[in-house]
Length: 126
Image (tube, rainbow, N blue to C red; front, side, top):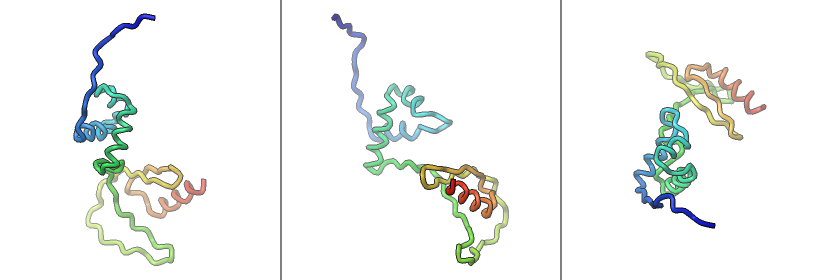
């Protein structure tokens, strides 16, 4: 069997800042892990390994950039939650709620709390 040399192999060294920038670019404008890997000429597995390493070093969190909004809901004992007066209704915002078992709900922030509670219970019971 005869082998051919197709090109010079190169080993690149990446700084943590560069790795973090690449890892965080996944999801921006809908970019997938595959697309980001191709753009930077690395493998998908490399991005996953970097995520793991950066997470261990405390430099990256999967929830980076996530926004959490307080949700005032009545307490189960029947005591209503105190609601501050609202001067002006903010525009609706897309919300993702992660439930047990890997399920998630996507809804607008203007959803009625009672309807949301019913929806959560229905999904968790399914």
